[in-house]
Image (cartoon, rainbow, N blue to C red; front, side):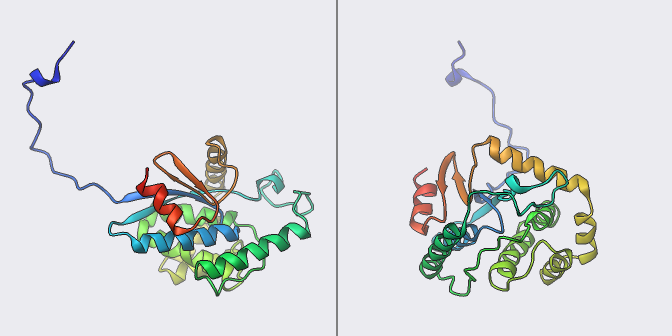
Length: 227
């Protein structure tokens, strides 16, 4: 059995030293989920209270998966068990949390007819090709466009406008939206999330510890700093 204390090998000091990157919290979310928007407001509050940066490792999720036809469109006639009473309770919960999290401008009407898949396709592409800061700007604008301005984030023209507002080329966005391979890759990410046991959003994951729902900043602090 080798005793490490007896090793005569010297560490390699010739290579460049690399600074550790910022901490990251994984967030599963869907733009059409009002509680995902509120959860991000809560996360922003916690991030602002920290001394060290905490980046978002965003993972897309499809709340409409049970209603999707084979061609990817949504069948709104599918009964998912969410009746008028469910949505009224959801809106009441949104009203309560938007006051708690300082999101007074948020519209409480639930975006039941909006398909977020196109926005998520673009968002994944932006994250992969434009860097974290640009992705974060785009991501936040998508949330604002839907929940503050009532824009249809499933519409290509709307997404091009949102992208251009954050300095992203609109023609490139149209090409991404027309790329079926990217849609297939996104669906694969949705399936991966389900395999990992993600059944609802928002879900926050840090060092294998999990918090579900639009939890308050102090709970996110416990999730990260108590891990």
